[in-house]
Length: 104
Image (cartoon, rainbow, N blue to C red):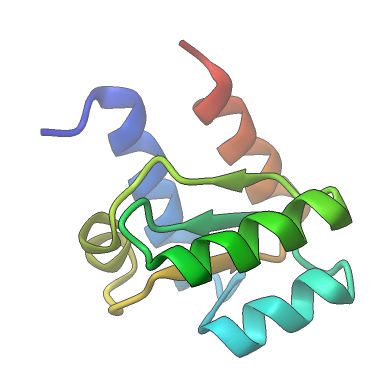
């Protein structure tokens, strides 16, 4: 079971989706990373090796924070869509995700 902090992040992810502040799908997320429209990226911890390398490298080179804290199943459940990669485009949501994920 996810701890309270993880649950807060997943709930916020659902809110961000309802607010239409998320983009998903590899090609689209790659594009918003390259155009620096992505403010935060969620990459499933159980994503394939090639996908993981591609997106962690891209996020690092463009300076976009990337979280691998959740599985594909958790991300899919939070957003109501089966997803491996999710980009957050709204700075406020991105800041809150960073805040919640860096608290220990």
